[in-house]
Image 1: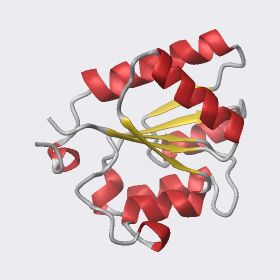
Image 2: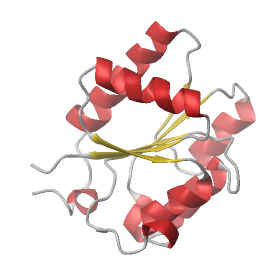
Image 3: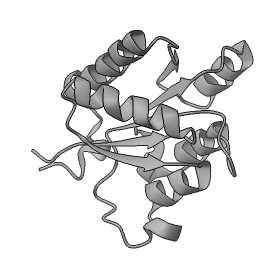
Image 4: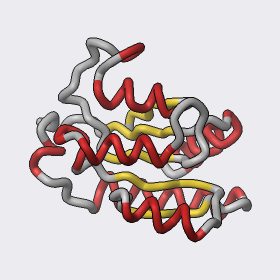
Length: 151
């Protein structure tokens, strides 16, 4: 079986490092691609810009998406993902510090699969990342289109 890819869309270097550390601590050994803004995330997903020519059969098993991003915000990334057939069914977990009810509602309305507020405490954050990894990478059965690149 092909190694699953996680797309982590996060502009805060500290949160990126904490997330990667939590993956390592929980033995989540999937390939993690980090996009530091919305443009980079869309470039990766659609094989354009700095990611032109990448293997488009290697779609992420899950996207961990922050909302407050430079250039293009997380809501726009999510909306564009849901507009295109190739990315429409990729699970998206909004992983954000926003506790705004309107952000949560808009995320779900745009097709987010889950909305998680980033715990401030490192141990709780590590546990949240562990559960995200277990669920989306091991327990969840993706639709056939999303399995296209798996062997």
